Length: 443
Image (cartoon, rainbow, N blue to C red; front, side, top):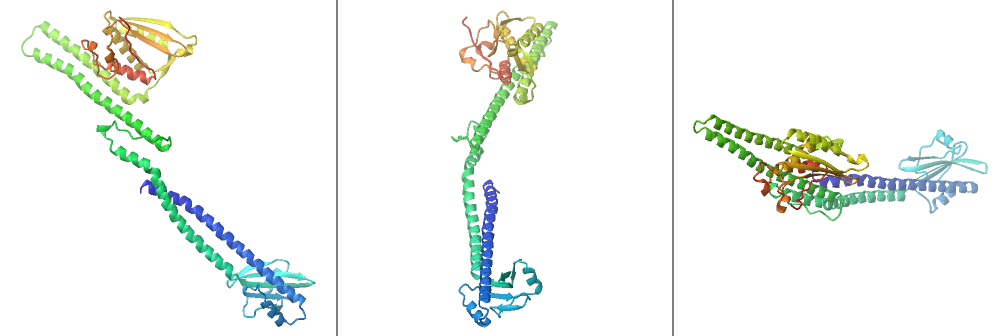
């Protein structure tokens, strides 16, 4: 069942009970009013008969019956009977109709306890009547033909209206559900046309920011993340295959050449050293590829700890100098805030050390003096860590690409590398909600 059909049914199930309850209240309140009104008429007729009976005690009962039957307010199938204190019937205005009367009924009514009940489709009222030391019990019965006809008409009218309103509600609900779901239908039709070949397509966002608008915006954001993931994966696979191919080709070529004929020990040692260097580069690139892949798909599971930024950088400088004796690292602190809490940062130690190591290693590798100066500046608003070297710099047209995986600028082609280090740095820095920038100073 489609969503619009389910919404229509839910709308009907919500409206129908309310409508049915309202109509039942109308019908039963009208029925109660009709019944009470008819009993009031019965009471008025019974009182009128008793008044005539008491005030015309010298008139013959048959004449009194004729006078009573001539009343304009006489009821349909009416029968009114009066009983004295001995429960004997002293008057009735209709001998052709009967109702069940016994002493228990009459005695129960005498203590001013009127009784209402229905018998043979007629409503019956039994009531006491006291006047001038006369103690009577009057039983009046009749059928409210016009009132019941009106109730039947009201019932049929309400039933007809219920069916008509439910039908109209179903039609209006279906139209409303169709219109309400039209943006979703548009999203579905648009989404069905999007594939891996056209991930750049986007769904037009409505000007209003309701649930549908937020859904479309969320869907577009998801498409952007998917497109980014596809692009990264495509670049990653193309770059990885290319970078892996070069050292493997070099290793294969060297081994094939050395197998062509017998070599001296020095030649074998030289080839083994060269192959060993290629294997180390291959291993280093494999580690970087693994780290980069883990950052792409496991970044949400990382844990962070709090540490002072000056302590973090100082510990890194000591570790880097120990592991790289051929490189020179100078650590300078330009400014620190008075509030030590402003120096606290949340970092993932392995990742932030990888980023700092890549920056420092790049600076030393491309600098003629193999030296990097790390400068820390911090105040109440920001923390800045600069890596400064005396390298050849980066061309302006290359700056926007150097943080892309496997991209290498013209100045870096002659130096060993794979173009993964700075891409890894950019990803790590973004995960720490920070920014990384590159700049060339004059000379």
